[in-house]
Image 1 (cartoon, one colour):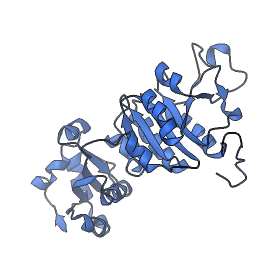
Image 2 (spheres, helix red, strand yellow; image 1 turned 90 degrees about the horizontal axis):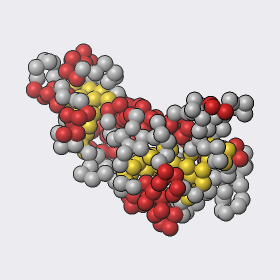
Image 3 (cartoon, one colour; image 1 turned 135 degrees about the vertical axis):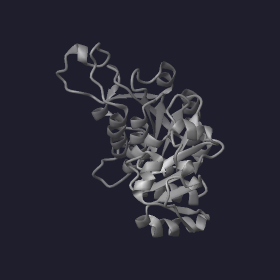
Length: 298
């Protein structure tokens, strides 16, 4: 069903006028989605029953596409010119498509994440310990999807993946990538080993960590990435069975090396991409056998 809107004071635009994240979260857990591709990925997730649609607003050139997608969901497609959409929402980057979604009543937990991953064979999860930057959270979801991770585990200190900027930077992969929230990452790590045969690997710039180039990853790994400022907290670091360092230049001055006062470091999303790519292509098939990335195995 299409409903056309032509006036800026039309009350049907009201939900799109109050689209600050904090306002939406307080309004029964709503969130905003923008751009045609990301809105399409959100609607795919709604079709699978993982999210619910509150409102859709699209430009005329996208109306036919979104009506066909939204029809099975009994969602009304509101249509307005892009200038009207921008004036109402205050956004200039919506690309002609906006949606407001409804969160599940409860965020998925560890059990749901374990249920979504393969029960055997190689796989990689990403664990996030205290990441607070929306750019990193959104970027890591996009990286995880692009490189083939099986899911993401966030602790309570991590930023909400359903904030508008996170959703946009992830290119809507927050709606595709399985993820879960846990109150304690160390406790989750201790459960992953017996429940899902997953070994934890801390990606941390420590002088005594194994250099990435020398690392053979466990067949089933959780790659733990720490806070942008202080890294992985001591309790989570202690829970990890392996520590891996993405090594920098060999001739770094001591004060710019691991633990130095002027330490060089990668941001969390970049470190995730490098470590995840290595883990996907340089890992054991069992306890000792290494899979050569050129062999086509794994």
